[in-house]
Length: 300
Image (cartoon, rainbow, N blue to C red; front, side):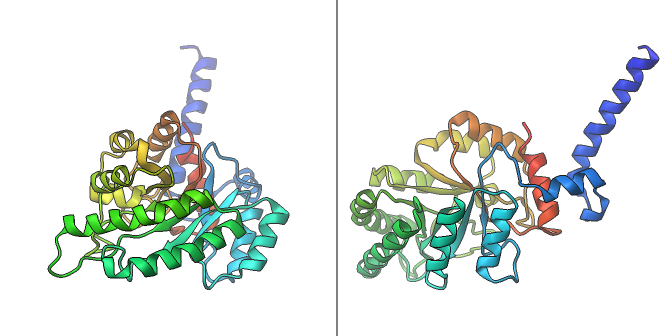
């Protein structure tokens, strides 16, 4: 190796090491001036990330978080319940800026969809949520199965979820808004929830058999529940409606834990998923660091 080639090799190695080190940077102060400048510019990713506006820029009023998302260059937001949100202001802002609402929560943990006594209330709430989705030009809404019921088997609870979703499907199809059923993890965050891992939600959605009833495939929950992320995504791809990400442990942004998100993002792209990926993760050391870690995780 000539001295010139050796210098080129060492420079390339140093650059690669610097990129890898971003996954462990203690704070934004360690970034170079050029990187600081890049952070301040609109985000540019292969993946279409939707910022969770309940989490990012926490402490600010909701619409301030929405504005921060747009200013950072992200194309979309997601959020949890809609009833406490300034819907008129949000709709106007999205219309003006082109920011999209990727999804929000239409039906939460309680009362459970896994109890037939709650199905009429579920349908009524669903119809109200569909009106909000139409107003916000939102194409997807999360629905949650419910927590365990004493004396009722998991299979019975899942059958009740199927019944509820079959009732809901015609309304979703008419509105052209997809219901995305979210399985949780019961090891860390949602002990006592009735739906976790991918096989059962895949089975449930196949039983419902509607193009507007699919899975909110949260990779944080799936990593804790079952791992083997890329193969599981391939096996259940026909029922995948939406993707959310957070690293494990910690539920922080990709690049802070054990998941090789660059590999997972590539797998999603190769499977044909090009829709929004929700950032339901807590920025570990501020949003600037989280954005830079996302750039590393989205490089493949």
